[in-house]
Figure 1 (cartoon, rainbow, N blue to C red):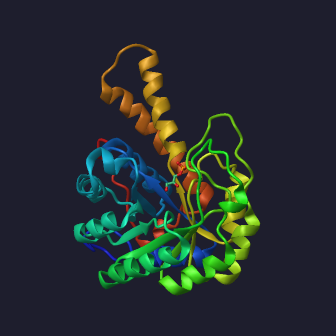
Figure 2: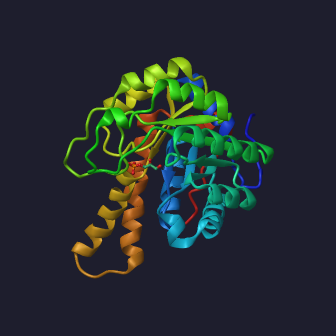
Figure 3: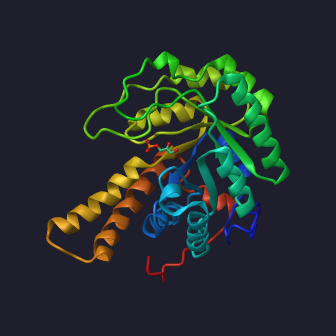
Amino acid sequence: MILTKNTGNGTAAISTREVMQRAQSGGWAVGGYNMHNPETTQALLKAAEKTQSPIFMQIGRAIIPHMGLKAAFEMTKRITDESDAPFIIHLDHGSEEEVIEAINLGFKSIMFDGAHYPFEENIKVTREIVKRCHDNDVYVEAELGRIPDVGQKVNWKDFYTDVHEAERYANETGIDSLAISCGIVHGVIPDIAPEPLAIEVVRNIRKVVSIPLVMHGASGVPDHEISEVIAAGVSKINADTDLRFAFRKGIEEVWAKGDAQLEVAMSLGREYMVSATAQKMELFGSAGKATVFEKFSIDSSRKW
Ligand code: 13P
């Protein structure tokens, strides 16, 4: 039994280091999914239970301005406490200030985003963040390369993670995992196929960087490309927009029939988001991997 129970984050909290090592050595990827309110938090956990998958519950760029890091953390902790899914509460795209607040709140896993710094400055700032995190037993993901927002016109060569910089960044900062840019974007334009991913960028970075690799922005990426990036060496994949679209579809379907209580609309949204998240878990290969951490029985008596 390798589950690290009761680490302060809830009943089935697991270690990021362990899940990332297992994903890397097993050739699958664990998903990082962003929650936005209690219902989306429940949907993510329900999908993890349904598929028996470990899960990163990510507190990200949308929820922090909406309710603040502390309230988002407490909400997530409360709901994860009711779930049997092995989970990690993870700060997504944190600034220096947010990382420090997260450490003080009790996060054990964060992603630091220093992409706006020039490269040498990014190394310096990240190294300090890593020291502070490791002194507090906090796992650090950090990103190198740039990820455009959906619809932005870009010259991709300027956005891909540079292989030599990736090698230096990983070696000189001491980060635990590296998020890379290989043609992904944050967000999706419905019905428009995204540019194909540059799988060779992943392969080339994999050759010189030994820590686990992460890919953000998986929404809208065709399934075969997701399988290719995992085969090329990506061990964690973030997805948000596709799941939000599923939630939204449920709300819209209910309200298309006339007025209804918000709870009725959110209920169908939650149901659709469970299915959409479960599909990602199957695709990423994390489905069935929860049993590695804990033999758990699913409690179906809950309302959600
Ligand atoms: P998408 O919304 O494109 O799936 O990206 C989510 C993400 O990468 C969060 O860090």
